[in-house]
Length: 373
Image 1: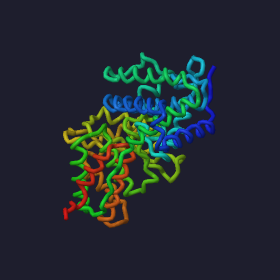
Image 2: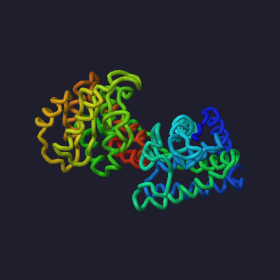
Image 3: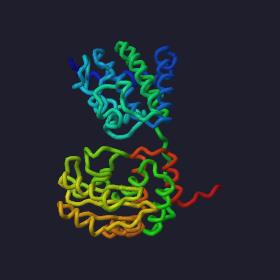
Image 4: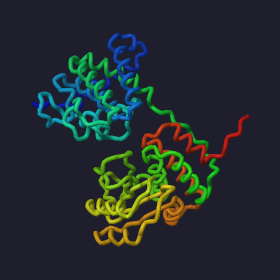
């Protein structure tokens, strides 16, 4: 028999845990101290193996157990064939994520759907046989050990453990540098060169290229119309890395979608972009292919094949071409557009969850060097 999480009850439990975490004496409590150590160990292992979604899974299990002691904390979906199965996404998205944003603790991943990642989004239940990379098996084993402890908890214990979780995860909130607002980059050419060097230096899972592309779109169309997905996000909300809406509002349809690739693309890898757009009813698509070793592509053949299925397809193989195309539609002066793009790229780097060091590197590439006094 499945269980449900009452959202108001979960919010109350979350508020109690945060109030405990705010108490400077809380770490002196034995159970909170124990879970501070557990979450520290778990967080460090998540960072090493790169499965940061596990952080949100652990926090959500504590929240669910506090809100409804009858839940099976190993379950991910209410359809799981096991007593106490519950919809883990519901409590994570409606309670845990908003609380993390209000009270500044990090869930390991950014975005409104933290459980929508491998290896959890297809699984019914957390088990040792979940398919993960070999180096991540110790993390799954440790997660199962912690879940076994949570399964034995009563409500007050779960709230104290959740407070320990909040205390530790507050330390993982990145502190981003502030911009001076004095930019050395003030022309389209210099902006293109800065983007090229910045993305070529390190990919970070495609995050740098996606943030740059989204920031450039923001400068032309305004950020309310530009939706940037998370890195490696499944094509559920939009058939592409970036979606350009026809009007403001989350329910507005997409007029164009863009895929950003910082690795070489070929004719046969471009056509699926048009096919996804066509299936979603989006009339325009673009591929931003900016790998430094990008080879020739038959753009005309790709465009013709896309048009045959009702999609206008455009290929950009350099930041210079993309900036020229976008800036041509802007009524503002060149320098104003460039400064807006720089600011938007900075914001998008933060939004996509890249570390503070990456933002610092970007600002160092575009700002006027500070003179020591």
